[in-house]
Length: 135
Image (tube, rainbow, N blue to C red; front, side, top):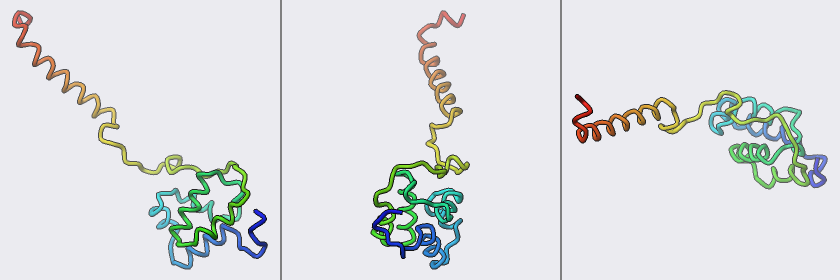
């Protein structure tokens, strides 16, 4: 762990777990509120969590989680001093099948329906100009 974090400091995962349990929150509640996958929160509270190996995004997850639990940000930042940029198994909600809200025109059916309506309007506007085409 970073040098400025004293040996008496509790591990980050234990701090997060203790703060959540002290507030009587279930992991499912927190996952819903933070829009994180349950698996992500479980990893943040697991003994395998190594703050020095978290990526920038994962550190953001930790900061958001700590902010949600009302943990002083300066306490959390001490865990990230002199950290290297590493890789871990945390993934976005999309990787676990979380629902996302897509814009109305995001669906292919809506787009094709609008294209067909526009083509129909174009045909109705052009056909009256060519009466010989109908006979």
